[in-house]
Image (cartoon, rainbow, N blue to C red; front, side, top):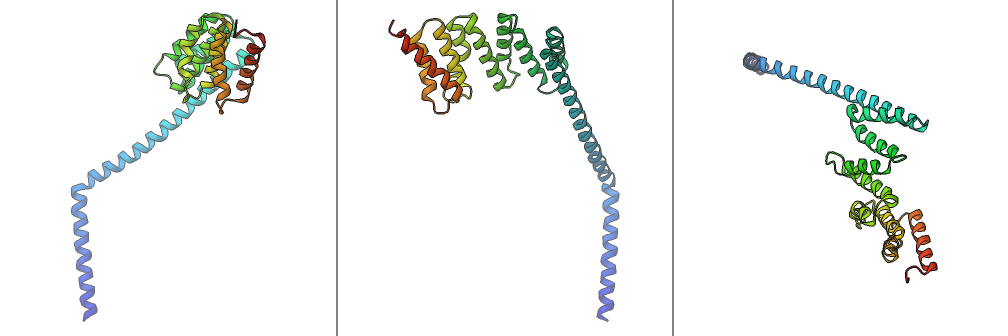
Length: 223
């Protein structure tokens, strides 16, 4: 008797659940189908976007490598044209890389034009900060030969702070600019800052020590 009662109760419960499911489906079936469709469409969209992004990045990478090859082969005009096209139509970080490489190529024949190009990059807030700092440093190095100490300082001194990853090169370029303009006391300050920084790369520290030795040996600091 107990077994029959249990069986009867299970059948009733099953029927109730079945009725409840029909009611739920009747009320929310279309919504559930809509959600399922959206999930499927979202997945398709995500996969499609990732495929497009990877394809675009791959194509831009190929264009950039082709431009670098042209530059290595001495085909400067063709390389600049390819880089300019990449600046306009490239994907991801390649337009910025193309701008940097174009400015480097320009430096071979037009130092001031290259300085202007690097300075423009350094002031472009849409460019990542690390790239802007690198462009500022490249402009400073070019200005050692073509500009005043003040011009070099305007580009590099903000990078010479203890927290900046480019401080070693920034201090070096400031020291070189001061040395070139016979400001040996200031040059010594910058080269000393390099030597005193335990994190200074060995090659930068060696160059700084060499110039400090030259300053000391020549007596220029006291003159």
